[in-house]
Image (cartoon, rainbow, N blue to C red; front, side, top):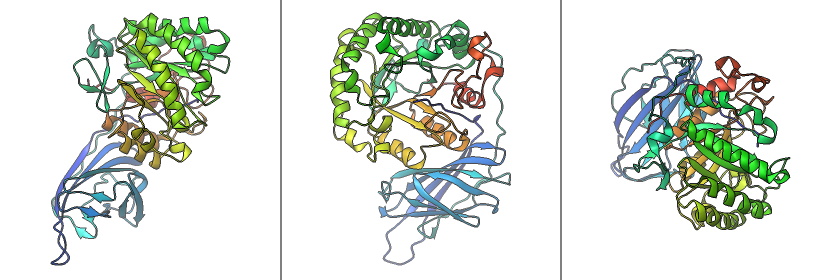
Length: 467
């Protein structure tokens, strides 16, 4: 699907550590205590984003409600996640979700929200849990004005590229890890369909992506239908292989995306997938920068059908390239089943019978919000996830940029060390595109050619990696 991400310039963080002892309302009440860490993770004119980490230091509790009061009524919760949020006057309330209703002793739950503000310091003075005041001090909040990244392209020094720093990747636990077995996060861009936007992927544009954006990866979206691979398998295979090499030369990882969309059952393309991945894996087996995404967005198909497809395609890749990471699409347009009314448990209870694999999650910030973020938060504790495609707008690839939701998503992915690629590095005439229409007909890929979405995405991707 046509999609993209946006990002806000990262702002300074305000952390409020409040160790709280809950007063017992009766002599028979269970001993309770908590710690609340309140962090302003981003701030912009008229708005901010905060994380709220609640640690239960007392006996186990089932059912909870956290309350706090803003310094003035001009501060409002706009959108929250991992709880049901409400506000009356200056007092905000977060009530447990079903999945985090019970907090055992020592259990932690991470909440968060975006808010609007007319003041300079949106730091609450105190917190209560289940109506009992949490004691402890609250330090003054400090904010940092976001800065605009430099628009002057800089070339990484030798040995400092993502590929040089990390080498052959593998899955360890629920994370993507480098050769040193350290969990890492890759951030980059996805191409649009090569049949439509091949001119966007040339030396100048790829240099800009690697050296100005400091992208870690290029996702190569090779449509199978829609005038794609099925019309000319040889050309598309050669073009994908060439782009893998271009990414390697610039020190970026390459996600080879077998971009199935319509029909949604990947088994329709099973023979094509085996042919394509046998050729690409054989050609690139010696390279350390290749990641295989075997089905873009399965839809209208059961998890059992997707699993069967994966267990037939993965051995074809492994026969030629036994070490590479393979990413498996999930039900409901790679939503872990959420868009089909399901969730991650179907995968947790019946995983693909293969090693060194990850599972795909896609989102579009204006369409997919709290319940999708809650699913990712849960799933990431049990499944290795890779967001191979997401956007700042609606699931159609159009509509208005949703800055608040996108920021909430990217902060969550950063926190969980989940890698991502933005849709799209192209000049498509849609709000998800990073480049203005007509850009790819020229030779300038500087910041002046970026759309609003592209500028925000670049500001996020170009921040230093944590390798």
